[in-house]
Image 1: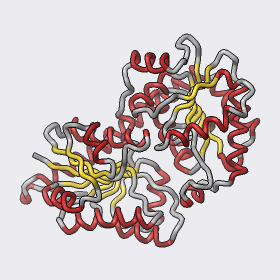
Image 2: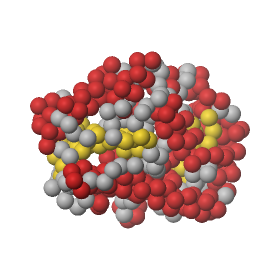
Image 3: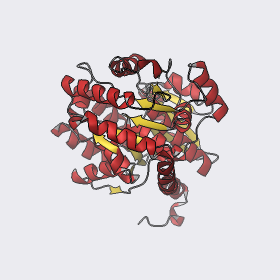
Length: 390
């Protein structure tokens, strides 16, 4: 039986949960008898969600070491980030244990922000050169890695989350009805990006945050949503680890709206499948989070992206939707309103446009899955039978 360990994403954010779901699904479909171990600071939650998998707290280094010593492969997903000393130490310890136990390591679906510190860049390069290959999910991530001079082979794939499916439509309708959303009226879903002075410095710096920019972004969103037809409902979807952060960000828009009565803030955190299902149900998404824009793309839902950092722009450009994104650093209320109005009025044509590209990205995601499966099969083959990797 093949043994694979996975580390790099938590269940604290809906988009990260989707990343874990996708990689687990990909491995189990391609290798039905694989034994998967998840390393996470949220091991209890992981164990509850993935009852058939093993979940080990990352702080339990004894169990982590024993699991890696038995594993055929360690897969890094999502991160790892090294913008804080704690992040760097967590990544370094795990990768060095895998190196000492001679467990091969690959990076699959890895994402990356432009790094803010010189030591973060050096640490990331050192750690990534311990890997057999890296398959980043965004072009901008691949460009950053190549710019760092990482010697490890880099394969550009698509986001693994393109293989996911939403919750059943009847479940989504029941959820929305419980929240007071009318099922016979059109709706626009909105995801927010929370910022304040307590947001980690590296996140604020990466998005060039200022309180003035944040206020202008909320003003611009409120104006754009007010300009929609009065019959359209606005549904704010929480995706941040702390529901209160999403609540505060949404209220920052709603209190600026003259049509606030049309707004609904969902009352709890959503699972990844629920979030995909709600976005698939919606007539349009205004996305301030990259993960939600990915969900819109795999659902075929028209989207306007508010880009807080390069990954949003990169994703929508890759979907041939570069005309559907605005940069939050230079938000013009008229520009945001114009984009939202245009996408709304062209939404049927937009669904066709997104759907065609979605199929291409899903195929690329499956190709990325084959890279992982092929690597594992190569490692499990008898030494004499192993072909040379190209």
